[in-house]
Image 1 (cartoon, each protein chain N blue to C red):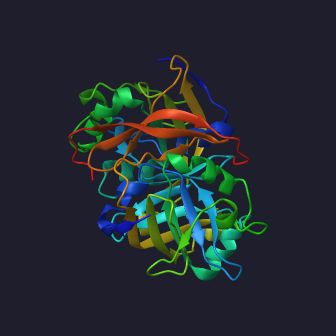
Image 2 (image 1 turned 60 degrees about the vertical axis):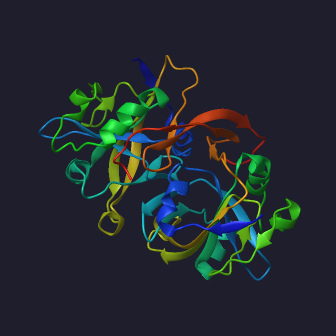
Amino acid sequence: MSKRFLALSRVYRLLEPGPVVLLATAGKTGPNVMTMSWHCMLEFEPPLVGCVVSNRNESFARLRRSKECTLNIPTVELAAKAVAVGNSSGRATDKFAAFGLTPVPAALVAAPLVDECYAALECRVVDGRMVNAYNFFVLEVVKAWVERSVENPKFIHHRGRGEFAVDGEIIRLPSKMK
Amino acid sequence: MSKRFLALSRVYRLLEPGPVVLLATAGKTGPNVMTMSWHCMLEFEPPLVGCVVSNRNESFARLRRSKECTLNIPTVELAAKAVAVGNSSGRATDKFAAFGLTPVPAALVAAPLVDECYAALECRVVDGRMVNAYNFFVLEVVKAWVERSVENPKFIHHRGRGEFAVDGEIIRLPSKMK
């Protein structure tokens, strides 16, 4: 796929709606990827994102060690792969190879972008003070990419146990809210 | 409307998809309500929720003072009211009265439930350590309510500037993910 830069000031518009994301990390044994929904914008610009990565996950150790990751936003067409990624562990499996996902080099971090996703956000861990209490990492998005070829991406929102709400109608209301 | 208890173990299934919520607080001048999308599950049970409330908002002072709030989840039918609430300040306006929302007494907190919303979560602030750095409050959901009369609620997800994705198709995939 072919991605272009997205202004960092627009990153919140991708994450604030609460889509499922794929968190990718680099490591000695190759790239890893996990499925994650517990994330939250903390600041508009520079974009800060809080996310929970369970300390039972391989990605937790990698995030702590490398202090880098990417957040990749899949569209509904990737839902089955997102679930397959969520159902397996990077300790046992090369998930990129197993599920036909393509790691692409990022510009500013060692963690790869997931080529098949609509958007990819290069992140650095900037605050680990909440890791012990909540497995909560504060990430700064340092570079953002979106797919050129996709017009109206439909994202997925996890309702638990493999049930997802897919983006439907888009409505616009006059708002002072950023 | 007529709400029933929801088991606390199921609360994450309401918030994990990232819906717009209405955060309600109690105060000397009466109840207040704000529109909020920057929230994140932190733990399944007891349900812990992190949320960002700007220190420019009246609700910030109330949340700090009372250490209680409710998170109320509107369906798409309430989208215009959610935006109107987001466009105004509780310092200047009684937003419940101005926008035709009904404050209903909660069971365990002084903050009111928003009757018109599909779900209402009674919350206590259990960790304020991230308030100074990020305006980030950690809430414990102590009681949860959902509407009896609504079969398939469609929630809204804010994409910024008054643009919302409405829940569309629901898909189910075999998942080990909780």
